[in-house]
Length: 114
Picture (cartoon, rainbow, N blue to C red):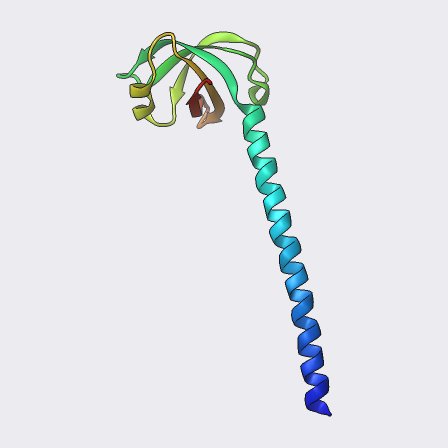
């Protein structure tokens, strides 16, 4: 009888764990979708005005940077990865995200505009 009760309790407990895991997997997927959406909404349209490979900087005319409370303007940015400058040329339209990195406004992500 003890074995039957133990087996039943183990079975019930494992069903609960599966339900919790399934709910956790779903919640993780939702969080991933929200993160993707957040990244999408933070991407700003810009146009490359100047590339300064020696200084590791790019000049961009850009739309408002909401996360930095900055209006649309043209300004110089550092880039997170200097190799990105090899993929940019004057006149290119890009989508990018900028953040404060060690007190300097830096392009932390970019992609060609579609």
